[in-house]
View 1 (cartoon, helix red, strand yellow):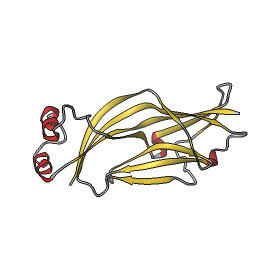
View 2 (cartoon, rainbow, N blue to C red):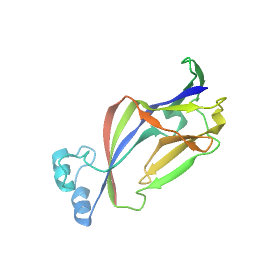
View 3 (tube, rainbow, N blue to C red):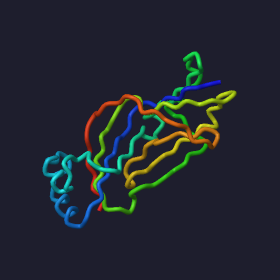
View 4 (cartoon, rainbow, N blue to C red):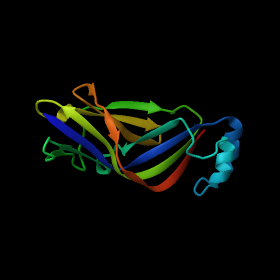
Length: 169
């Protein structure tokens, strides 16, 4: 039987910029609560603050911030996570934890990913999130694994709710 798994809620699209010492010193003098994005782009030597190869996206990993819904072939909801759901296991990864980086977090809300799964019977205990910690500041669910098998994901629709800037130096 085929199942569709959807992750929605609140999360982050984080743009990571690696920095040199000169960039760090200049950014330290800036107001990161409300930075001049044109000045920041110039310091990063980018046309746009979103211009980076390092973008990490997903729902925040706290259960009150994500909702996972599973639908059967007839599009009937057969399971959904609760706001206190705890996974039995997770694949935890840390990225940019020792790097000198500027994290530009776009706080987002909506539907993040959709997965298609083919299995005899869906068992939520076999669902494992891949949780990525970014620069020891932000934790998001970046993927799902079912019964130790990677699932192919499609990106869905979400929108920005605000920007935050963090300097890891």
